[in-house]
Length: 338
View 1: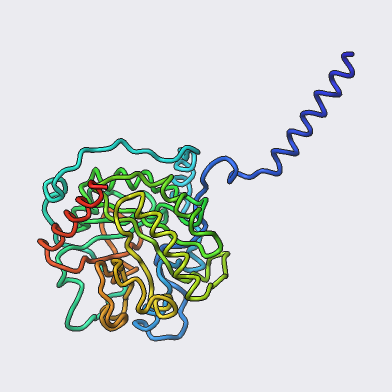
View 2 (view 1 turned 60 degrees about the vertical axis):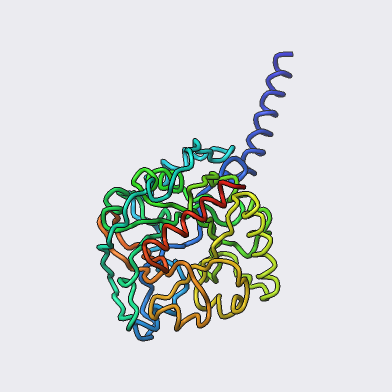
């Protein structure tokens, strides 16, 4: 009997081992994204600098920079340990007046590793500047970044239907504590259905009436393992499914972030009633996206600022300080009323 019991125990152990070997971490918790979404220098293509900047797909890292520095690796590993299968729930705060909660607008003191002459209308002519960040910025000193003129921040949260940026929760909390208006963005994955991507975003991004509207980031990314490029009709259909589900949950109409090549292929004349966030790092958006109204302009992927090691994306809000507060107030009112 003892021998038989021992054999049964060994057989069970072998079976359990085989079962575990066939399951990856995706089955248990969210994992960090393999999408490379930080904008840093790409290898020289022989194209003149301003043109090369404009043609470069948004938020793509160079091949030699695809792996984060060792200290970033350790930060990422620490964050991965904190990922919980139940999702991220942040304690709700009472809704307050936007201007009273955040404080005055701070003038930007950013620098640019690859400055561009934008002509008559330059980024400095817009008073409200901000940034967008992901795991690739590593540990950010948010108070210092705020002091340099970051009045708002869009923070990478998710992409696809199962990838969570491992720095999202840290950045989400710290940006608010430093007094920035914050919002979350989702990198859309063309090899995954739109509904499950919306569910994944909702699971991981808290519903905060004081947050900026959520963002859907749509672009072509040659570094992605998904090489699919759906038809324009299919692209618009998938975006619509995602955005309507997000709007129903958060009570805010999502912002559409895009880059010149993707816009030319899919978005001309589409989604006229949605706010746009446009990448234009060599010319003013009016030149790159003629006729398109926009709320945010990403004017650099090579920004430099105290509080961040390495490069960071720089953005402006289209409007004056009073227009900023009016816009923010309307977003909060809509989100609170839902």
